[in-house]
Length: 325
Image (cartoon, rainbow, N blue to C red):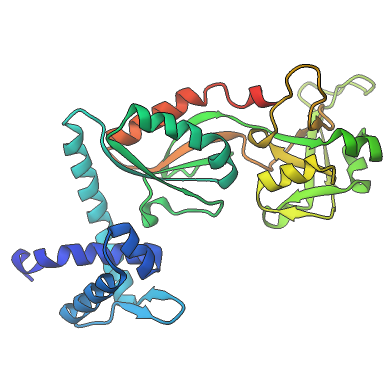
């Protein structure tokens, strides 16, 4: 096929790559600013021109045939390169502009990212942001996202990762709960408490703690030795959102692990803290991530709008979340 024959099909080929990522004609149409009927018709026309079925349509789902998937796999790098080249050329104009598709965890996004985005958009009126809050793993390249905000211990090596700040996991409970049930003095004591669990794979009901082994009252071991304790915990509530978990802890339902960014703010004056640290000498191991990152799939060019957003977030997150504990 000559380039003259191919040119009219380029937009429809790009539509196919978006459909491969979204698996939905409705979402594809929304993302590209066309009607659902138009998106479906254009795929049908592309199949007629190619002479092969590219998409499997059912009443419940949309998937690609082997031919469709092979075509998408071959085209995605080319479209990604075109997008990067266009962004680089547009950046020569000097003023950051364009759309940034951004994804972030629900609680972190609601509590701390949204206010920072508002300030950013006031500073850069020619930039638009499409923010999707979700706790699921998002494939940035396949789903068309420019940037992700994540708390993790190990960002993927295939991505550019900018550290925004440190973050910690905190074991907390309300003063009312501790007055009623008592304060555990060792991680093993948690087995007899009501523990509210954050759903995180198969490890939600198992917490691991560590502390330097040479604390007062203990025989001092070799330098650097660490005491580790694992404990299985149970309780009346399991949730996959730290805001819901925080509200249950405030209601006095039990002891739970919260990321520091979901802690309620400290009260003004001399009032009691709404949530109290439990076992503060012990550090929770391997639960929530230890850093907040901005992530982007590696590319030779980073759009100026994305660079500006990352720098804005780095400056605004520089103090972390110490002020809300």
